[in-house]
Amino acid sequence: AEPCTREELQATLDHFPDGAPTPALDAIIAKLREIQASTPGGFPDAVALKDGRQVAHYQGDLSLFVADADAFVNNKLAMGVVDKVLARAAGVDPEFIEVKCTVPMRILEAEWQKKLKGNVVCRYDARVYSITGSATDGHAVQSEIENEDAASMNVKLQHELEVAGIHYTVQAVSLTMKPLKFL
View 1 (cartoon, rainbow, N blue to C red):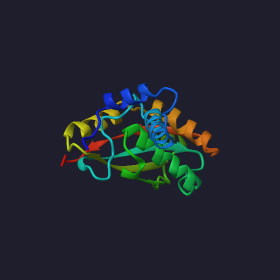
View 2: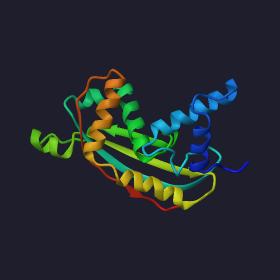
View 3: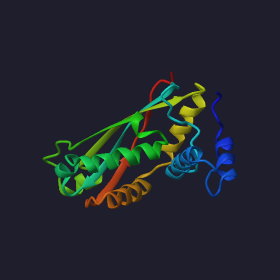
């Protein structure tokens, strides 16, 4: 079977606005709606597929300021939220992004310096897969990351932390991205 374009996927959803006639098809339609809702701008151009070919690789840092940094990085639920938010920002499946948050040693810095630089650094490693093998899919992810800024990450992180019932005030300070060699 050939992969669907985003237009074909949208047409399928438009054809079944009130659900599908069979439970199996209805489950597929529900999953498509879930993917569409979780991806900024609708269906992504770059869909992470297990049987696809890796077309891009990105690494970067999300610097945060959190009042209780040590507790935050040791909270598995909070780290899951960071993973989820970074994956959504990139438009990739959370399965294909690795995030490791640490508290850098900044003992001699004043509190205002820590707030400016962040006291939690979340390094991410995202891999983009495409069933078509098109490098265009990798560029689409790069564009998604480049369109993010500290303000949008703040909103997304705080929202997802609240939804998860996790009570931390997180301030995103910066988001960097370095594209590695396209394969």
